[in-house]
Image 1 (tube, rainbow, N blue to C red):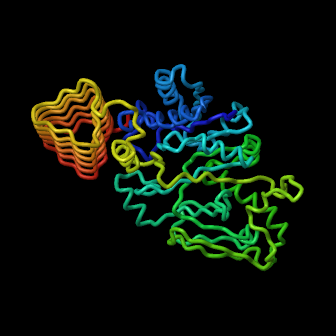
Image 2 (cartoon, rainbow, N blue to C red):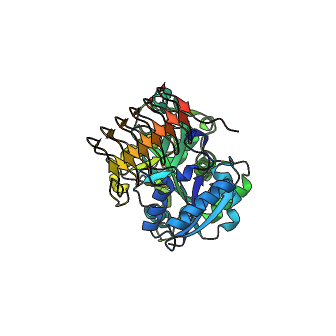
Image 3 (cartoon, rainbow, N blue to C red):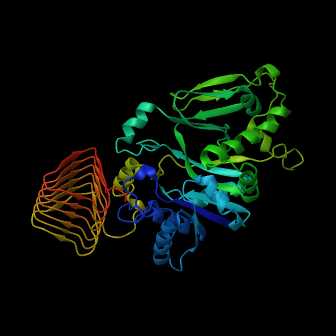
Amino acid sequence: MDFQVVVLAGGNSKNLTPLVSKELPKPLLPVANCPVLNYVLHQLEQSNLKDLIVVVEGEDAALLVGAWISGTFIDRLHVEIAAVPEDIGTAGALRAISHHLTAKDILVVSGDLVSDVPPGALAATHRRHDAAVTTMLCSIPVSGPLESGSSGGKDKAKKLGRYNIIGLDPSKQFLLHIATEIEKDARISKRILHAVGQMEMRSDLMDAHMYAFKRSVLQEVLDVKDTFQSLKEDVLPYLVRSQLKSEALLNRTPQGEENSNEKVSSQNNQAFISRILANASTPSFHGIYSENPDGSSSTRKTHKCCVYIASSSSYCVRLNSIQAFMDINRDVTGDADHLLSPNNIIGPSPKLGTKTTVGPNCRLGEGSEMGDKCQVKRSIIGRHCRIGSHVKVVNSVVMNHVTIGDGCIIQGSVICSNVQLQERVELKDCQVGAGFVVTAGSEYKAESLAKKEK
């Protein structure tokens, strides 16, 4: 499709401490014993989008990610690894590699997106509308769009009541307004309402961090707005606002209404606003793009901001918090198991002791061993783990090369690679960083345990 694809893979995300480390950057975090980056790359491959730039924060992380991609996707994808400085943001990362962007259109996707929505569908929508930018919107997952780094992030997000407010034209093709992380009420200028005629306000959709850009537009914004750091919070809202400016002038918004606002309650999950203001002859926004009577295309706008709305039955979640990490690992071994590779749920040659049970929605990695009378429920066990007898693991993720002593109980926790849990340890809602040793008989609840950085 002549698209150049940029995968923003990230690096050592602070929201995911202590799960990430220098040895395990975010792109390689396991989802059902497979790096999260694998899910995006597989979807791109399925859409025949195989010319990729994978952007990784930090030189060391880039080397690790590059080595994994080379070994996994050899002869299947054409991948260039680009290392960028840490903490420069998504727009900053694109600015840093802009000299590599040569195609007419650029598809940008977050490397932490786990989804069954084909990227090719977004690309096709972008081309069909000849848009400046097209963004994918999807339904907010059950746990909500989480930014909290704690395992209790779900409750915290609900208490804060944060919403994304998205304004669409009645045909649901054009993006007219976007505001993120709204806690109370959103205010929309009457100038905007006057410009668009009608607008449907939605708070049940989220920006999935998958965008198609016209390269010339993207590079101009990155060059002119050199302080922009975020695609979601800076670049996209700027393009949405600027597409309306010329329309507001053409419609001659009354002076008294220019700076006045209409209040939209974020508590209404699907509020519909239809405002036909003073100038009743103002065309609706989507009509502006219809063909002229002589068959020519209208050119009253400088650019178009379009949307592709994924089906409500689609799976679309970003791994951007510990809670999201837990949710995705649960989902891909449950209702979203179609995202898994066609391997067996239990890896080759596991050794299970007598009266040991492994329930549904579990995954056991290659070479792991379990003693007698163990129970594993709704959990994932990594590769080459050694688990003693009378161990109970529920709603948890255990990574690779973990040793768990006899009589341990693990609930709702993440155990990172090379951890040693001595006998009779009890953990509930905890995260244990790589290489940590938990001494015999210890009990922890809602704790983050990790080695001190040297």
